[in-house]
Image (cartoon, rainbow, N blue to C red; front, side, top):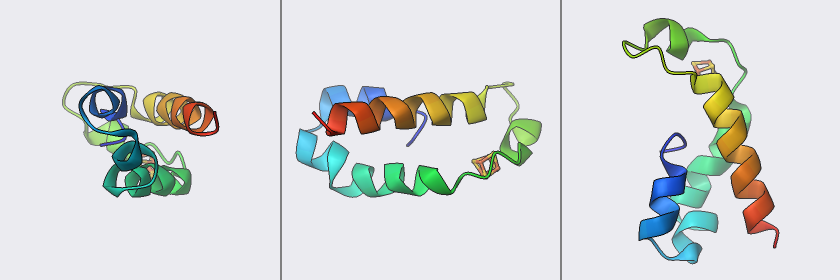
Length: 65
Ligand code: SF4
């Protein structure tokens, strides 16, 4: 969900994205320790840590406006 939050933002109301189910998932992104385990297991080689950080920053900035 954190990887797809920008698409979710386009399809769901802001209350879902910033305080609802998606908002709760985004808050959990703060617990990422950047261990890299998910990237080692990702079959597509996605830059998961980088995307989590970028999407979290985007979400926090947009949500504070
Ligand atoms: S880098 Fe991946 S596996 Fe490690 S804490 Fe963050 S999301 Fe979880």
